[in-house]
Length: 232
Image (cartoon, rainbow, N blue to C red; front, top):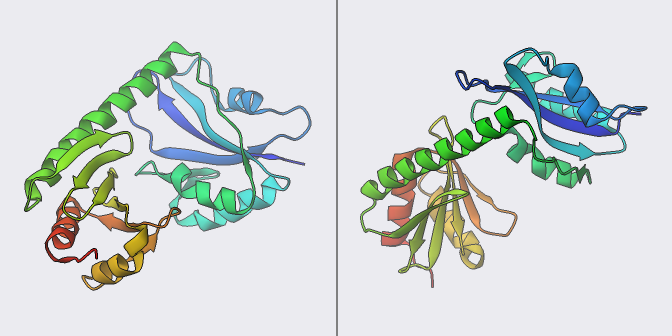
């Protein structure tokens, strides 16, 4: 029985093209391992290499795979490969896998120098992009705020409302805005923001989260909360 569900991607070790596809598959039957499956997918003489970026263990990985493939069918490119333009597939899969009790398998760091260089460049490009986004949103705020560019993305600190705004950037320009330290006033913030036409979800830790908002909308929500929301 297949017991491992994995997510793989292709990378161009030459760094010339970006490949926005992810493969969601299963392995683990008999002597099969993640490493052996990776070798089957990746052609060692090709500049396009396969990299496993996430994996989980579940007693019925095939049923989980089938359900996920059906859920993502509208983004299917070919076979088990799906378009992941915003690079958020793993982030979206994690709560599902936690819900069904799948055990996450740690992915060891690659020893391949080319893969390491690609990962390093991707990290540097994200940091640069997040820093630019931080500046763009800062310019749209009514009142200057303390800010930083953290691993999770641009972050703004409100001394007046004692809230923290985390911007999880998306390549599409439709970002995720999480409002930290809002657990105690979640219901009030949800009602306040939804009155402006946005959908608000509750984060795992109880804070408020707004999905698919542009730079201007992020700044607008922050400005509205800072200017008109009563935290007391």
